Length: 243
Image (tube, rainbow, N blue to C red; front, side, top):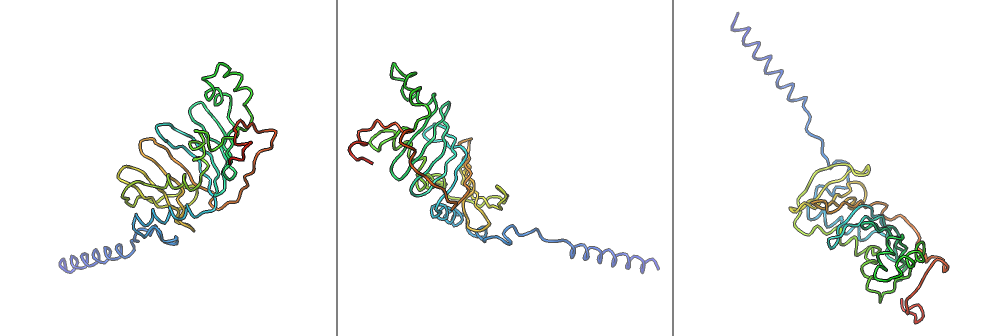
């Protein structure tokens, strides 16, 4: 009787374990119901994201970036033929507007005071310029430095370049979108949308070197030159036809 009872108990225990194993569920597939980019190799994910970003007609970049040792906070809307937005660097805040090759900058008093600090009349100059757009001609040394913030191809090309071999990272939501991360050994991270077009939606640089959110891909916006009475143009190119 005892042997029969023991055998029965063993059989019941085995059945219970089998039932428990049968009821356990495998972990959910993070790539289920997505665009499938997460199933690809890390290098392919990064390449597709970069291609998608560069191919978009427009984008909104916001966040911080470090360039040449200086930290900038950006809030820029960009497209192929221009861009507009705000840049903050230290105590300086300025707006940028590019229409084709024509670049305009409008700064606060601190921006113009620093720009004209070599002049004895710096305070007067900053007061005169504050609230006005200043035309920056391509012959001006600052043109290249400032225009890069309005150049969609250059800026997106730079921020989506991980600069080294990539590994696949974690899955998480960014701005309500499901994303997969691609990371480098150095710590740079590109978070790529798993919904619709595999756009990069966030770029994170290591060591506090900046985080940028990329949104509003393909969203239309207009750039146009400011009214003439709001523009100060000191360039000789304005008279000679220089762009």
